[in-house]
Amino acid sequence: MKNFNLTTKLNFKIIGVVLLLLITVTAHNQWLLLQEENAKNIHWLMSITDFLVKKKPPGSFLDIADRHGAANKCLRGQILSINQELQPIVNDILVPTDIIKFGYYSSQQESIVALGANADISLLVGVDPSRFKPNCEVNTEQLIERKNSILWHGANEVIYVRPIIENGLIIGHAFASINQDAVYAGIRKRMVNTLLAVFSMLLICIIVFRELFVQLKKDLQLFAERILDGQTYDFNSEITEFTPILKYISEQTEKMTRLDRLNIIGEMAAGIAHEVRNPMTTVRGLLQLMNAKQEFTSHKEKISLMIDELDRANSIITEFLSLAKNKVMNFTDGNLNDLIRDIHPLLQADALRNNCDIEMSLGDIPTIFMDQNSIRQLILNMIRNAIDAMPTGGLIHITTEKDEQRVLLAIKDHGIGIPLEDKEKLGTPFFTTKDNGTGLGLAVCYRIVQRHAATIIVESELGKGTTFTIGFHATILTTVPSSEDIQKTIL
Ligand code: ADP
Ligand code: MG
Image (cartoon, rainbow, N blue to C red):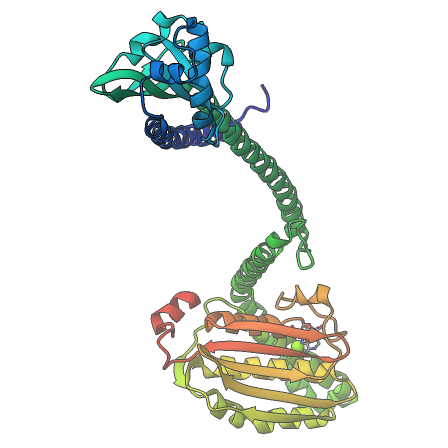
């Protein structure tokens, strides 16, 4: 029993409970049905016998036999002549069921004298009176349950008997009888059918769910493998409804991995950057000194180049340091529009040098809780990337606006765009597609976004351009994270 594991046991338990519930509910329903059926049938029995008593012609059964000139003939002759008059009355009753029989019973002849629908005519004469008579000797209307009825050839019946009284004497009976065995059998059959139908539906459900779970398991395994390879962006589940959930998980995992990477890098950076910078400062100082001296005039160009390269290295370290987790930030309430207006000349100068132009569209926005220096750096980095993305120049748009919850800052270019497979890697330190790139600009931006508890969305189309949209919490809205919340994010 290798496959009999916990899930199988659980399945059996669930199926067991469902079946038990099913049987209980069906049994209860059938019981209610039986009560209803019995009430309806008894009503039929009463109506039929009532009709028979009312329709009987006047006179005793012997008088009726007399009218047909059969009073002195044998019993069989008497019965047949009474039957001649009473049978048409019985035939008048049309009962929409084949489990009801009815007729007249003559006490004088101790025989059934007329019989209704589907009746066994042989019962008209020659019936053993001792088997029928006791039930028909009563002088009140009675409902009798009888085992092994002669009317139904051994089946159980419920029979309703009404005495026919003439001049204070019981001259016979009108009766109607229902085959109780057939009623039970009908209900049993219905119950079995219902159970079978529900059970088949249950079985179909189990099969469908099993298939679904098997497929889900396969998909999840595949998805987990893809997560390890970092290739979940185009993952489609065989169960289409499941794809958005996997996409969401993929995004969350990607975010978590990115944060993890950033944290590790940040800690590393904090540790080594200072150590590297100090000797570099010494070397730079010495080089500057040498540059000023006469004897090194012939090497002036090379020394300047060395200083430039050292500066470049230093700027990389500075950016790298921005990733440091414990870098102190000074959060204050401020308006993003003011900050953008402040640095606009700087941005514009950089843009113009590269045949680009910056267009600002600043909406009416509430203040946000921010570290001004970081946000300044974020905008600078993004504008730099936008300029890099448009080697032949073009327009860059900076837009601010508010939506229900947040303040949105969008930086849009009409550059080369970002391929889908690269989109995943954005924000990863040292990911660059440029010959002279450091791959740190966006890593710093993502870190700043994270420390502001903000969101970042990248929309890009190859050859058409890219838009980075950052969503900040506004300070005046109720959903704003408190400064403590932001501090928690920072720590
Ligand atoms: P770097 O600019 O030094 O390459 P970044 O971290 O700033 O490093 O950017 C990483 C990479 O992201 C870039 O090399 C580029 O491929 C891509 N990228 C960033 N911004 C844009 C943009 N606006 N348009 C196209 N690609 C971009
Ligand atoms: Mg860059």
